[in-house]
Amino acid sequence: MTIRPATISDAPFIALVIAEALGDDIMERYPEHIGGQDRRRLELLAESIRTDNTLYSWRHTSIAQDTDGTPLGAIVAYPADNYMQMRTTTFAMLSELISFDVESMDAEAHPGEYYVDSIAVVPKARGQGIARQLLLHAIAKAQEMLLPAILACEPNNLGAKALYESLGFRHDGDLFIFGHHYLRMTKTLPPAQSSRRNGDCSPHGAQIDIQSILQGLHSPQGRGVVTIDS
Image (cartoon, rainbow, N blue to C red; front, top):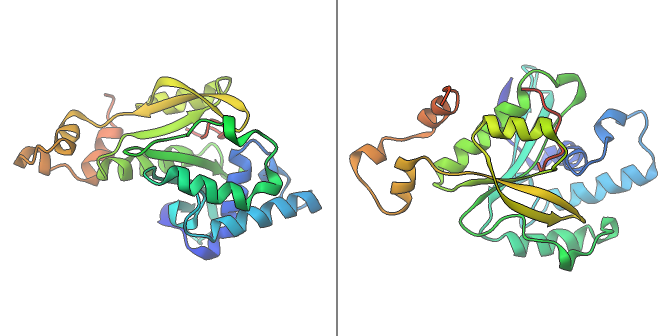
């Protein structure tokens, strides 16, 4: 299994990932039991994914693939500096699908944060640790940018919460998004990286790179709807 940046041609697969992460069981039903309403939802999502300035843009996505190139899962994550602008564009494109009160929805993330928006793994590949690897990949990117990683977890999804906590995420507040209550979970920067973000350019701080981050994450010391395969 390898993880690669998505391309615009991955939009149909990313649409499945977004729909699954939003609480649909569409991956389990695809393609044999997909109806017209499902197809319309996937088409609208794919259109937003092909657009650069949206929350779900292909540019925000990393794909886990098998040795033969078959997509196994994906994660959508991005710096949140332009979150509200991207949300406005995204929700305008997906207005046909929105049944909740947008005005009452909290911001999922804020400037200076790296938001892990959506993650899902295809049913046949679950139980192999792919979700964990995708999350590690996103965390490493966040830390490379010197940003804390943020995600939303459904309160009753105890498996997802346990996975996030095993990777260092901690509950630090609550969110009301998409018409439901979620836990806001944050993985803060390691102390050395936090110093770098605050202007410490010492040689010790400068030695931290993406490889050391990944090694540290493996040491002892999605949105919440995600199939856990840790």
